[in-house]
Image (cartoon, rainbow, N blue to C red; front, top):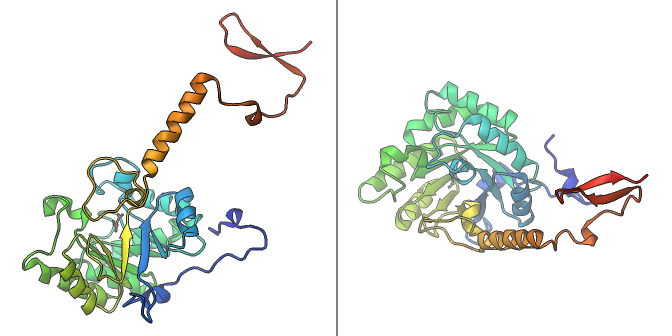
Length: 305
Ligand code: KIV
């Protein structure tokens, strides 16, 4: 239903999708028998998703970070289930091989296991997702278990959980001091509840290494060091499109933001100078119309008598 046949050349068989069992099998992925570390990145629209898929990324996340990246909000709290589903459908159309994960928005799963199951079901049916991700550990383990039992794969998320930004006092590193025990307990609870992967966000690398060694499923780090079984970044961060403060853990692999500003300036300059569009950008003349200037010098079309 959500195939992307328009982007595939005729006769070229689409690559097969990375499956949940294949992702689970990447536990311990650091170039050994489990293969290389998992690569995950966020996407919010079809065009970006298609480029990410072409690059061979393993997993694409429609993160609720879309609230900040796409909508310009201060945090992820206002993002709705309908918004996640809308972006999910767009991203799904761009993927031929990457596995598609969708973030469960704030208050779409915290109320009860039944609410969580209903929200996850909607995301699968209306958002075209192949798995869902939710934030929290022991306190959402029941929700994870209920969703998994219904046949919906779940990715957990512990450490810095942005939906709890106010309770945490800001977007801060977690797992310092005795707090590391809570993070380990949360990760173990998610593993026990049936999550097939766990995101570890903004925690010290030794804590991430300890969690990774203890859980049976792949850990996917963001600001959690290099011992995780995979890494995730926000696409606009790694592309160098973000402006202003960036978390310490992001790396700009390109300066696409500067390239966009440069291209926009060049376009604006050419339009203002009358250099664009040039004749090669115009269709062949109809021959039946004549362009004339009216009294106020605006261009209009006039039928040739
Ligand atoms: O919403 C998001 O983009 C995320 C990633 C940072 C893991 O949760």
